[in-house]
Length: 306
Ligand SMILES: [Fe+2]
Image (tube, rainbow, N blue to C red):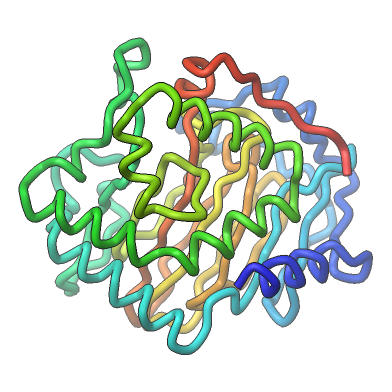
């Protein structure tokens, strides 16, 4: 898995598989520090005149005009038995967690009808509940809601080794600086909170403290405003859907997504969305990290051009 991840990223970085943007500059986007107001989202400028379509035939990446990778698409990251096993594991977690499209939720209007598993679940091992940035961070509520969710979460942690090792290795290959910073946050978590020592015994090869699993939901345009600037979110896709399109309005770019694909994006700094995908079920797991935790650890997010 680690060799597959490493090779896939190296192919994405080849000149022929890299789209160079002409106008979008990552450092400028960080300076603008966009927030998710509906008017801002609607009026954010399309910065590129050339349209980019990543078809998923080969690993590929999108690089900003100031020389930072901002999106990396790794098609076919998970295949065959590995993909089936991980899909089964996240669906089993879904049945234990019983997500609902109602209740506290952004994007309430984006859920598909007619499926058993619909909604959002979180598996953050340490985080500040939304609106409580200055409290002591804790394991998130979805994990500790009932005895079944507690056991189900730990079972899932134990079953994600292969997908964790793909995603963590890919992060190292894509961006060693961000990998190193996230590693320092990981070390701080384990030094400071005993729960993290216990969880990491099962949750191997994973540096991100946050994971979110969405069942049958598409996404309106947004920035991941709780994540640190420059940080990478990593998304893995599951289900019976044929193809979905992830769009980046500022970049005038889109990606064809299929089951088993992995996408890395700097979600705090690049507006992104996924429209309704048509037939079939579509689930995804996002690895993320939150800025409030980096603040607690005293670690500042940075980036260097490629
Ligand atoms: Fe996002």
